[in-house]
Length: 468
Image (cartoon, rainbow, N blue to C red; front, top):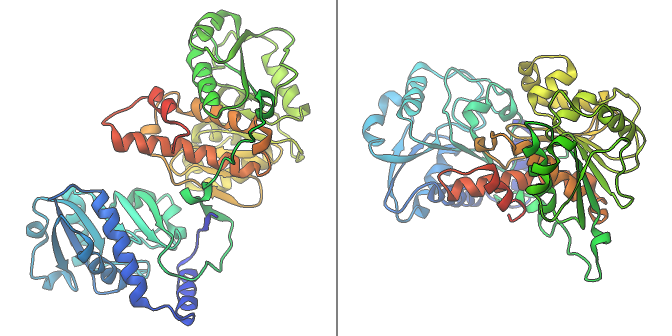
């Protein structure tokens, strides 16, 4: 299950409960050292140099515990009790290093760093050597996200047991880098449940469930996609191909007549229809996506009216993306039917009549407000660490994905994949889990591509989607 995002005090309480249960700090530190080493090995090549910066606290102990596991690498340990008294200069120790392991300060740091420490950390950042931070980037307050004078800019932060609250503050995000969670470090099961939860790959083991052997096309639903317009027909194609990657029984596309030919020419497995007035969706339709590529000025006159009518009255799951977000009716009343909206921060700002900066400063509140404003719909607030949630209840933070998802068409793929999944009646028992799975798979595909190719396109993303 997803792990809760916790405070430093909660982390200490969790540790105390573990020690009372008979586990020892020594064994936990040994386990952490092994996990840190595994991540460091994955970030480097055989024979490359790794510099370990180890402070005097338990964070330094974790770093030192990694030493014996870093086989096949040239490892230099720089003990830093006091920067002025370090026998080796950072510039000498870091020469030719391909990775720095940051074990200077952990989550206990809560006061501004002295000038000597700030100078050392600035040297780490100036070196431009990738940094693997243990538990927290040194210099970041794990509770508030405040930068305590200076902070290490990590490429990856491998936080222990559970993410800490401060890592999600706008001030901390550039220093945390990619956040990963070492959830199994030898502690007792988490005693906490909270509003914010971090999804882990293991949350989706055996999901989606095995299909029944007697299933047929009707068993697995019919996704209907309404999208595309002159100059933007590719969005409808990408969304439909993504829906097909989710493997519903059928998929149908409805697109304006002036782009019917280019849309139909690029799709084989989906049925393509020109949009008619009034709309005639198939009787077997089990989920509807409106929006990808509905951006031209000469859209059919009845498109907006049909969308609003279906959004208000249909019992089917509906997803609103891109162009359809402009048409969302404001309705405070919660509805029983499943509704999903997929805005990026700019679209969220427009929907809430505020700036993108304010959205990004408090993404959780933005999600809550969007859901409350639009009928308690499920909100997928895209961006770094995409959020999934409603006006109340749990919010799930996605940890997969990388900046190369910032390509045109990425959002169309996500919206289509979500629709292809929720079109399947067998995947609606836990609707929120299905949405979280779609978001995680979308990011995991991007992570796989970035790990195996120097560059990739959205077409590559489609080919990889659903395979992780």
